[in-house]
Image (cartoon, rainbow, N blue to C red; front, side):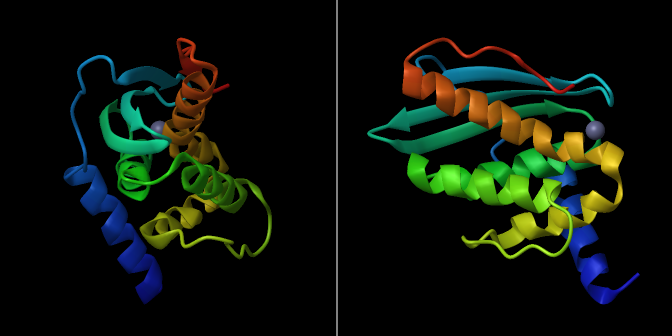
Length: 154
Ligand code: ZN
């Protein structure tokens, strides 16, 4: 394993063993549930939005190291940001995880890039995307002023 892969692995394990922004937010924060039955990953995402900005994010996760590390990294990447910026991060992250070949992001993905290695294990890509698809549903609900639907990875 190369030095860079070692470093990436270390960052993933660090987020798995000490997840960031863990917990809950009281209503009126938005609450969205997500599940990846294939692996048994489950999470509940709470987001507090004000004037188009994500003020606070909390997450409760249960599942494999990839799903939990991805959720933890995601909370760090989006907290305090404007929704338009977050949409760009989501787009870039999904392209990184789903497109073949080398990937050049159009925004700074920071530590999120450590998850690119998960591509080598196609069955785990859904684990990495669970928190993100749950976030997409949450942002959609905010935009349409409706209740979010639970997200199930298929
Ligand atoms: Zn998983």
